[in-house]
Length: 143
Image (cartoon, rainbow, N blue to C red; front, side, top):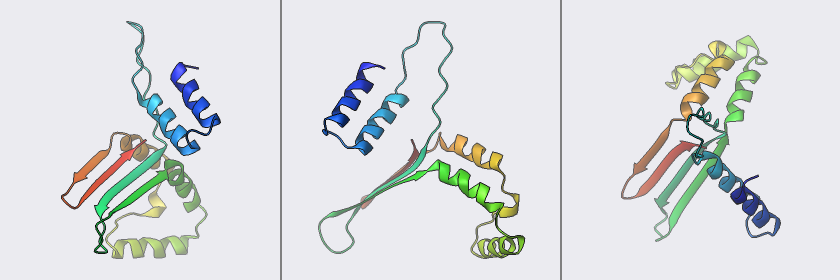
């Protein structure tokens, strides 16, 4: 165990940081490039575990405060959702597909495969969207 990881765990044990803060710090350590020996093969990139959406915006209630939204969706939820589609009766899938199409979402749940989700998650790792607006800041990324 490296020194930084040990320090984070000690701070957690002493109650100086929360478990969520420790998890974020440990995740940040994993994302830091590790200096490797010359000629050594590069380490594979860590798979993202969460899709994160962070919004900071002016409070629309007329107050002078800021509203903050911080959503972290486990990518495992996407994987589980694909597996659950096999349990939905065909008649229900047809109705869901019709409603999705009517709403402008051209997804056919009968054609959704586990490998498609894995490919999507792999490509999400490279997504980092930042939107700066005078009224709000929006950031979507994987961690």
